[in-house]
Length: 300
Image (cartoon, rainbow, N blue to C red):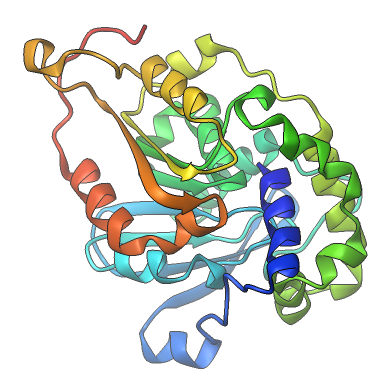
C-alpha cells in the first residue's frame, strides 16, 4: 500500500492540494498529558505516543506518514480508548537500519516487540494503508496479541489494487516525493533527514515486491475484523469484499446472526481522504470495538 500513498502524494502536488497542514507539536502534546517516548525494539529506537485512557488500541500510519499526519483520528479515538500510536521503521521520529529492508512482516514484529516493551499483552489494532497491511501481519504472525482488527485502505494481494497504481510506481523518485507534504514531514521529524533517498528506495522495493498472501492466511486470522475503504480508493471494492468474506462476512445476517466481520465503503472518498473522515470513522470503529464477539460459522 506504499505505492498507493506515493501515487496519491504525487497527485497532491499536481492538483495543489495538501492533505496535511500540521500536527501536534511536542509542547501541545505535553499540555494535553500525552505520553511521548521511545522503545528500543529489534534494533530500532521506535517512537510512540499514548493518548487517552481505557482499553488499548494500537494505531499504525500509512507510508511516509507520521503520527501527526493521522489528523483527528488519533485524538478522537483517544476519547474512549488508550491509543498507542506508533511510528514505524524509518518513519517520523523512528530511525532506520541501513541493512534492513522495510517489510510488512518486519513492521508487524516491531509492533509486537513494542507491545512487550511497554507492557501490553493484547490490544485492538487499527492500520491505514501500509499500516493496514502491517496490521494484517500482526494478526497473522502474532494472533495472541490482537483482540480486534480494523484494516483501512489496504490489500493482502498486489492485484487487490488497480493496475494503474503499480504502473505509476516506476516514476517515483526521492525528488518527486520531496516536494510533497510527506517529504516536508520527514525533514521536520526524522533523526537523520539525509536518509530520505534511502526511505524512498526501501518503500519502492516494498511496493514492487509482489504481494501474494494466501486467502487461507487471511481466513485463519482469529481477530474479528472491520474492513474499510473509500469508494474512490486505490483498493478495488471487489478486493475489499473478498477480504470481508474471508473474515466471515457476506451472510444473510437476519437468518444467521451478524458475523464478527464488518465492511464499510465510504462515499465520495479517495485513498488519501479516508484518513480525514474521522467524523464517520470514529463512531463506526468504536461501535465495532465495543460490540460483543458472537459465535459464528467459519469464514468462507
